[in-house]
Image 1 (tube, one colour):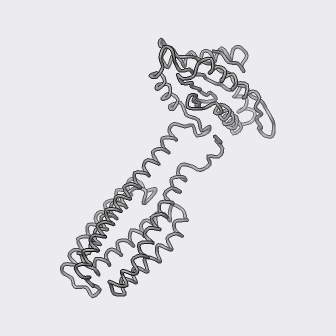
Image 2 (cartoon, one colour):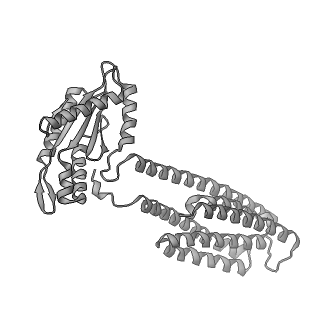
Image 3 (cartoon, rainbow, N blue to C red):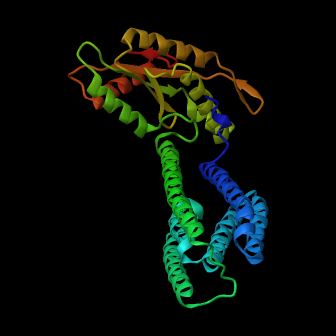
Length: 360
């Protein structure tokens, strides 16, 4: 894994994912309004067609907003909401209540309450947005009902009963499809964000390796799977004289050493061998119960040699670093803490015996 290639932050990744979803939704809405042109020409007077052309113009222009920053995405979400409500109001006033356009308000209400629609809102803004949206949607829904019932508008042009029934069925289908679609979108968004947050919680940002919490979970899992005949193994890898790197070359170069050693150790990483950052300049390697201890030690010795041969370029100066390794194997009389303690004791022995050494 190329650690340095992970330049996109979690927030930027979420924003880009939201932007793609907005563009997809915008394309669907634009396609809907283009498709409305012929029915509106046949069924309604020219003012409904004019409203629809304004909607087409907006959704075409909206692509410009979607290529901007977060501020413009929020503006897009509110303007789109306003356009939808205006268009629905005109449809109900022109075609009548029996055509079913008012049901779109329900799908809009559900859709725009989803968190991904208006990003970066505070808890207070979300609460205020929810209240205002619910109140305005209910108010518009009721107002349209009484307008249709008691007010004779000059723009009203009711279609025939058959056409009204067809429009009603189509609008109901669109409403429930939209609700189902955006529920699916919201679920996938939450799953995506959960995975990203989970990765941030479990992985070290500097090296990209699993952190102490992540490795502890693996140890607990392996303890349950291990038997008397087959048990897991661990190794603690410590960079020799790491403090000298920070003191001589600075912490930035110390980070370079940590990342490059992490990459070397990751060469052996697999489903059966897990590598993580244990803390500071220490790394933890776990071999599952499927790996024989002797094979694990050979792997560790290979890693020790690879590190010792690696050239680190710090401030245009090539240096070499070594690591000391303490290994330990599980048995039924040992807890996870005991196994780690044994590995740590062996690491101390490796340091005492001259460093750049493996003690098991």
